[in-house]
Image 1 (cartoon, rainbow, N blue to C red):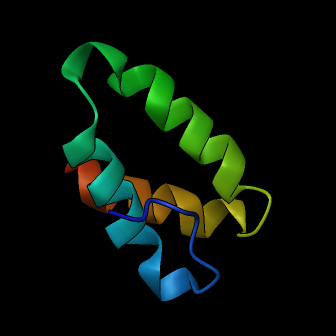
Image 2 (image 1 turned 60 degrees about the vertical axis):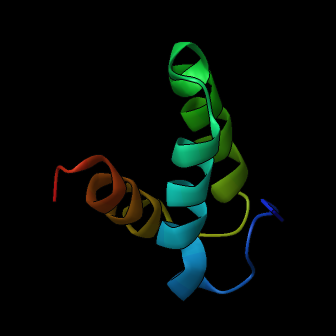
Length: 59
């Protein structure tokens, strides 16, 4: 499975979902924090937050 950061914002939610599903529960917070930092190099904050909320069930 390729978990590279997508270049297309429409794939950001799927990327976060793949990370969540492939990460052990005890590493989830660290993985999400790193993913958020990485995504910030390519996408605007509002897009990142919206994708993360959809994946984590908060929006």
